[in-house]
Image 1 (cartoon, helix red, strand yellow):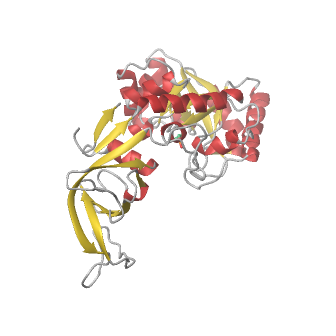
Image 2 (cartoon, rainbow, N blue to C red):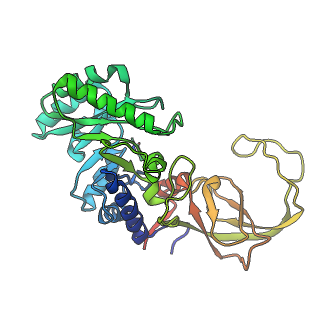
Image 3 (cartoon, helix red, strand yellow):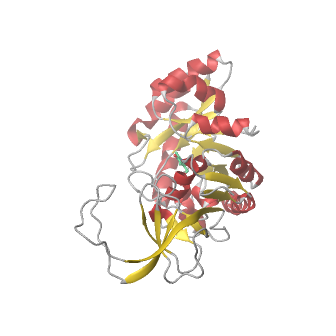
Length: 354
Ligand SMILES: *Cc1c(COP(=O)(O)O)cnc(C)c1O
């Protein structure tokens, strides 16, 4: 195995997807699988579909194209508003896209007519997180404008929380979204097929059975990939936390003081770091760095290994209390979302499918 490696256990992803999709199913929702943190890796897409994902959603057209090239033929959803310069690609790879600009939807409609397709749009409503979406008071007029374009169909509405502002999805937020649905349906005299209620930060509501009826789907990445919900990062019961592992190789093993010696200034990232004095310790360096992982998003699997930090190419560990670590040892870590994203996007990290 070439190292560092990101090891992908597809059986665990399939299992996690099955667990979460059945939780959603009990509440009348479908699971839309989001493989964006692994760049739409075809093996991950396949595992999600086998586990019950009803559609595959990603923020990037490249990732949806990759899923398609990998053999996925089901429904595709583009999570980020298509860029005006790329509406043709968006229509080619996505059956549905999340939108908040009428101008973009007009361009999508034109592209869809040209391609002889009908593209579905979901109108995003901002309920306080301050990322994408129109304010609630503009939802009806925007829906009206979007639904009047030939070539596109207004499939429904959606919301995204807990991503930028950190606003927690609550039952009240979900009810506010359903109220927007009711207003649009009664003003426009149409039925919306989709009410897309959020992401893995909605899982606490699901686990506590607090999702109101009427939300038709959640768009889920983290909970099926890492087995955690995205509000407190607590485990989703029944899900594996180790569907992904990062493996890195020890290239130096030395005993060193735990505090730097000499005049201390900025490190490679412009920060002045302070170190607790724990005396002389056995330390290991792995051949992996910020170009491959986020040191703050790594949980060592070997007992007694502690992550101290990383520069671009060196991951520094305290292994004083660990077992038999040698130069050449392969150490394993469970990635948090930040490290998974970094490893998946790094050209230096080998992707190994199990
Ligand atoms: C990334 C993303 C998701 C999935 O988020 P997870 O926390 O991984 O479940 C859902 N919706 C939108 C709009 C996204 O950008």
